[in-house]
Amino acid sequence: MTEQTDSLADSFRAGVTTVRNDQFHRYELRVDGELAVIAQFINRPGHIDFTHTETKPQFKGQGLAKVLAHFALDDVVASGKRIIPHCPYIAAYLQKHEGYELDVDWPAEKPVGEPDNE
Image (cartoon, one colour):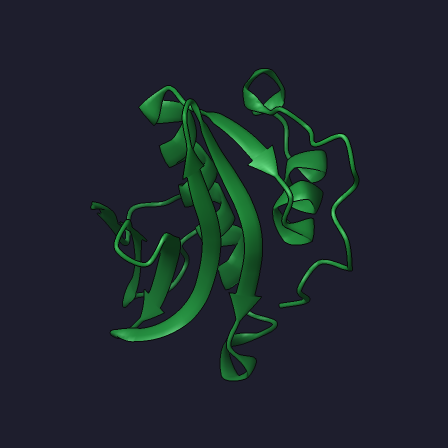
């Protein structure tokens, strides 16, 4: 399990923690211990395939999904794996943020649906 506590540049509030939870195949962001955002993935040989990102209603609009996306994508790159963005939120994040271009394998089909608004 990979964990980071309050040290991301995007992590602007106390009590925010991020973790990769391999048991549940997801990255998690917690606020004061409460699960706030998840980014689900499939661990494939050489790739992490992001399938869904969800923010609990009471945490929307706070920028927390961006914090988790940043952590998750950096973790994948650091592991030497490549990113497959089937999740619309992760795909949109990658299109807006530079630095991941060489680490992404875009799926042949576009992600279905709209990004999960924070």
